[in-house]
Structure formats: C-alpha cells, structure tokens
Length: 339
Image 1: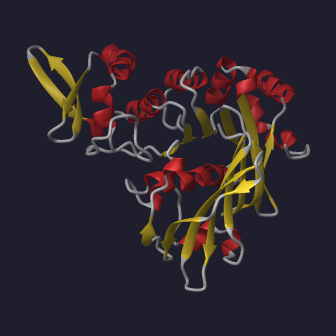
Image 2: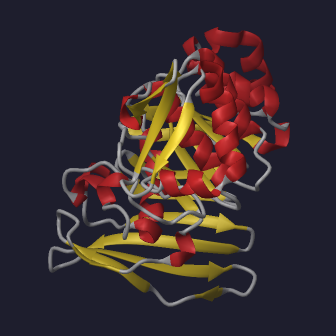
Image 3: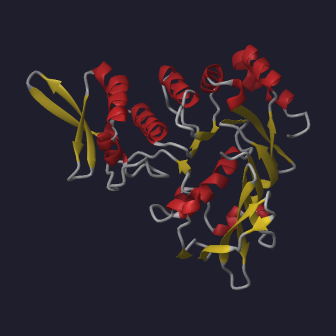
C-alpha cells in the first residue's frame, strides 16, 4: 500500500505530500487539480501498461511540456511513493537533446540503499520514442471509462488499464463477477448477457415472445456501462492501487450508492484513489468504510498551485452531520495547516 504520495512539478502541482490510507477521496471545486493528483498515478500506471495504451490514455496533454509545472522544463518532474521502509521514485527530465527522459530508482530507508537509475523511456514532445515496460508498477492501475463496442484483448486476470479493452475476456473467466453483474443490472430488466468472442463483442439480449433481440453493448445505457466497468475493475483486482476519476458520473442515485459501497466493502486488499463531486457517493463510502481506512482531502488552488488538506476524523464526522451542505462549505476546511 502507498503510505505517502509525493508529487513535484506536475501540471498545477508544485510540491504536494499526501499521507494515504486504503481509500483516498479527493473533493474540491472544479479546476483545482484533483485530476492532476490522480494523473500522477496515471503516469506510473503507464510505465507498466504503456504497451496496451499510449500515454494519453493515462494523462491529458497536447505536448509533454504540458506535464511540467508552469511548463518549466528546467526542474524535473518527480513522483515518489513510500511503502513502509521503501520508496519508489520516478522522474522526468528534459535533456539537452530536446528529449523527455523518464527514469526510476528505488530507495530502502532501513538499509540506506539506493538502486541505480533505470531508463524507462525517452520521448519527443509528442511522446514518441523508446519505451521499456516496468513491471514494478503493474499494481498501479489508472482507469478511465470510455464507451466501446469491441474488446479485443485476451488477457483475463483483471481489467486492463486504462479503458478495459479486455472486458469480454474478464467477464468470460470470472464466474462470480459475471453473476454479480447479471443479478444487479440485467436480471431486474429481464436482460441476458451474450458473448461473441470471435467478434470481440458483448451484447445484451431481450426476449420478445419467442424471438431473441440483441442490443450492441455500446448502445446500452451510460449508467450500466459505467457500473459494469467499475464493478469489474473492483472485483477483478487484488492487492492493487485503483485510480478512478468521478466514477459515479451519469449514475442514478441507487447505483451511486451501490458503487460506493462496493468500494467501501472491498476485501481484496485494494487501495483506492478517487475524485468526486457527488456528496451522495462520498457519504455512502464514509458510512460503510472503517474509520481508519479512509482519508478525505479537500483540494484547492492557492497562487495558481494545487494544495490539498487531509480532513481530521472529527472534521469527517462534522461533514457527515452537515450533509449535502458540506460541499457548499469547503472553504472552512481549507484554513488549517496542510498535512
């Protein structure tokens, strides 16, 4: 589990140090940098899954200079993860050859030992160039929902970041997960699930008299596609760091609660980093989570820099008592010293 996430010179983040727990939720007004915090983990996820999707699937940019704070290329971009006595450090530097070089090294505090730097990629401004996959980061999985009709990847252990291009294979091979989706989303509407592995397609089937009518998966409601995507992510992963940006978007309140509780009750040793604007989602997670498992960060902008403050347990309880008005009173939670 990530105990400390430290980010330097990434987009709107100059220097941020976050003490993390099992479930980490980021709230705040739009354009304060919540997505940038999550995308720091997206960059690390790319290091392990860049062979499946280009960098733009994990982080937003037009050119790689956009990744640097104020586009200042003289200072390296750095992301540090601390796990007990060990740290993983990833850096991007801009070289004299107009290349962006990504390097990794590890540090063991207990042994005062630092590994040699390992070159992972060397890109031009458009992220074209040499790339070497780093398995050490394959437990970090940045997910971003997108509508899709084809699922060509055959890998079936867990849903592949960032877009779940192997959803068909995962549903075919995880019986309990498949049944969970059928029971909660399809059976109430008398729908059935159809797999077309030769065509890399999933379809939803309804029966009218003695006739079966199939509906392309891409035409199923946005709510159901999102829920199936995120539920598959949660239930197919174990011992992983899962990163979601507003997973409850476009979701009916009942299913918002269902998704939040699925995260709160996770028993597969996953760690979550999630942004949300939805009080119903936040309070549903808080109600079902153990107090020692959840951290809530209020994210705000100060002098054009992203800042984040971790709420105390008392402040979390106050927020739950305030209810929906909590999101209209975030200013009162910014003023204490940042943790």
